[in-house]
Length: 485
Image (cartoon, rainbow, N blue to C red):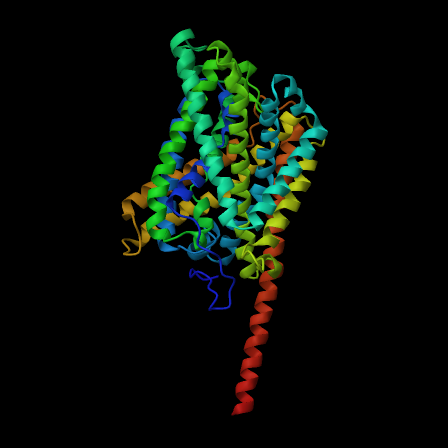
């Protein structure tokens, strides 16, 4: 695939440009600020604040630099797939895109499982136990998944409103959580002390949270995956990245501290921790009536997260299908709505399988944490390519098509590359929520090996077919020329 956008005139599928700057800002907020990871991180105690700050400086800032730089140089559809391909070649582009997509096969189910734990609070505390019912969690997750698929097949002009409502819901839920935390802190004080921020007092297993934090900070690149669906991307993306990044950082750090103010670290539930904190703080401040409305707002937010990642990541197999490195059917657009409906349906089918498989031999809590850690490893692979690409651009020197100086590119690239590598390694360290360490490690290793192995298989098969097709076409062309002569 070239960096040029597909057009109807060229005979390629034509995507509609429906995303403006406001849509992108809300998309970035809903994609980046996934409050479902806050309880997992907050379980490490106040010392995790330092991990947040390190990740924001060493991983999140370089990510913003990379998105602005690459979206200016390569504004077409595909994002991380296109960027790695332009910098390192077809195989690396395919691997980057493959990991980005397949990670979401795991990640979308984790979001849906989290939604199960939150949505039951809408019906009141007496319904909270439904979150641990496997049958209810499975049916609810699958039903919502296919509803989101249907809305996104209808088109981004419809699907983006799910994302936008999710972004608004995330901002409202995060701001409410922070507001309640400040109110409780002023009236009751906090459940931790300054000494709790000391690194020396931290459990060594806390290091696994760093990978989850880095994973939680990805999402600024999601808009560029839909590059051909953004109006004037070279002007729209930079401002949206800055505003989306600042809002995301504030909401994440504030939400983590608010959870720690409200709930002792040993009592934080990884699936329902946010509502635990809201419920407790609302009771302390005599605002108990807020719990059900905030649960509804947070449910809308999480549905937006699932929709954003489902819609965005489905563009990767769509572009790979156009490139003939995956079945060509994945590159088809819906005849009426001009959406990659085949890619969306395939993604949903795979996610449905892994929603069901995640409950094998594990509780809802362990299934959620294992899927999350596996998603961390696969999601960070494309960022190795992104940051290595920044270093490569810096080594080439100044370029009129770029946005940043070589010095900034070098600093962001090296920082992001080292931080991403560390985040991938520590994802294999089991957190304290894991009861069966050997089963956790087995699922992690087999999951990574399976998806990387399948990537190699698909690329080898389809690259061979593509090469044979080019050879046959060249032979036919030379034969035609010979007949003319």
